[in-house]
Every structure is written in C-alpha cells, then in structure tokens.
Image (tube, rainbow, N blue to C red; front, side, top):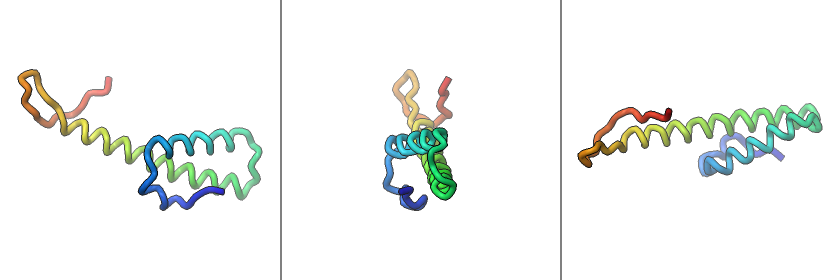
Length: 81
C-alpha cells in the first residue's frame, strides 16, 4: 500500500508528483476505508513536502545562475512572472 514517508530521498520530483496525484484521486473518490485514507493522507503530506523542497532547491539554483547581458555570471533573485 502506501510507502513510508522517509523513503523519499531518492524519489524524483516527477514520480513524487505522479504518486501525489494518484493519492488525491483515491481520496477524492471516497472508496478507501478509514485506515487506508489516513495512511494515504500521511503519504500525501510527505510527498507534498518533498515536492515543495525540491522546487525550492531548484529555485535557489536558478537564482544563483544568472547571466547578464554582457555575459557576466552573477547572483540575483529569479523572477518567475
């Protein structure tokens, strides 16, 4: 059934997101029993935290790798607008 929350260190963002989407579908369908729903919710919370941490790490890397018009590399916040 649901995997342990602490096994996420080697899970890619894409796989974690796909698993999280599947958990949401199962929970929204209402077909899971109470104990399974609780386990799915716990796993979903861990996956959400993993995805958020992965995205934050990616954002920090992007912010560090900025090249200006002259070709000089400098560090500045990235704009995602």
